[in-house]
Amino acid sequence: MTCPIEQCLREVSGPLRLCVAHFHLVPAPLRQALSSFARAHNRGPAHRAAFELAVESVVKTLAFQRQLVDTSATQPASLPYRDD
Ligand SMILES: [Zn+2]
Image 1 (cartoon, rainbow, N blue to C red):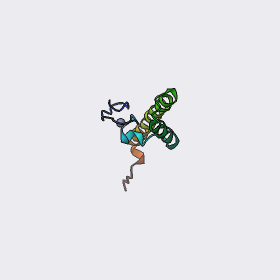
Image 2: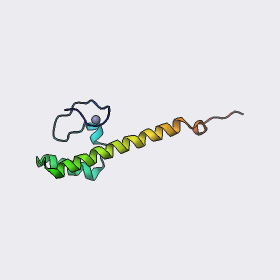
Image 3: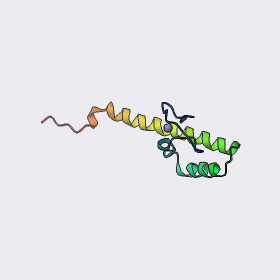
């Protein structure tokens, strides 16, 4: 299967079900929960819920990062520029 994050086509093998880059965007407590579920081979509702939360949180983080980039790009006043 591939990583479930938008436009990420990295192949995912292993129990974490997110590529390494995106897994590291998951908040630490949730990451620990996912790791321990994965270790326990627990594919029950708790694992699925934690995984869905993790995906949601990564999507939010990516949107936030995009917003930061957009904001700085559309504010030329924030560039160091002097005209004297
Ligand atoms: Zn990914």
